[in-house]
Length: 82
Image (cartoon, rainbow, N blue to C red; front, side, top):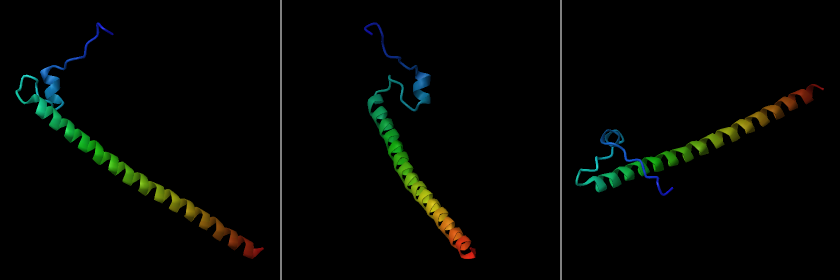
């Protein structure tokens, strides 16, 4: 591991990722700003995922309740003809 080093992206890759090229004077501040935007997007996606999970859970429970009610209703109808 002593002979390994990190990969340094070239200017074209840095620009494509939205990061400044390192020879710009404010590269550090711009990189920190870009990371903040990325973290904000992750937080938004996480809260959206939690909301979707809650709605999906409610739909599953409603479907199960409907299926149980339908079975009970069918059982009542079948039992009344006997």
